[in-house]
Length: 258
Image (tube, rainbow, N blue to C red; front, side, top):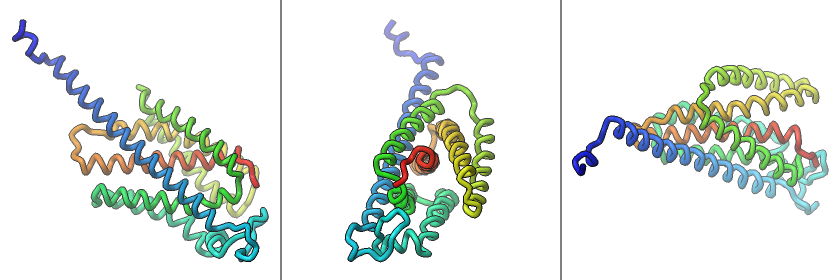
């Protein structure tokens, strides 16, 4: 009986290998979510910190004023109304493309630093939301976003349904709202803006589930530490973008303006 107990059957080997894969996958996904969470914290801290530097309640320090009455410091005037505003709008986009196309040549530590830098730059770019919306509504929408994101990411991780077809459809919808958003910059239609926000919520909610499943399927137990680290960072960047865009769309729908 002792000899029988020490043998490993083919089924036992399969179970052991599956257990290794499951444990490795859980560790990989935890790393992805940790990177994403750190990125969001950096973004939030950078946004709030920059807003504090950009506005003042002391008229002697003000060099400009926004339409809602907030007084701007020299920093605020530069990032909210000067040419620097457009640099801050497009710089995060450029950094995303740089990381996406260059990550295969980076060490994991370098890719991490680029991601953290991107998250900080995004925070500076998003600091204007504190000038537009009340702090209470920003907090409320953040928790709504977190709950929605968590539910859809869990669905994407656990579902047996193949979401590839849905992902292709959602990507086409994403291209559509990007084009519509650019057009609306010049048109300035509130109705179009509302429609874009509603569609954006639906699209990024679906993309959260799709991207989570894609990140899960990209995991390979045989990856070395460098490859696994790169995959974790790119996965974190993907989910980070889903979260940020979902948050902004919900904020446009439910945020209370100052």
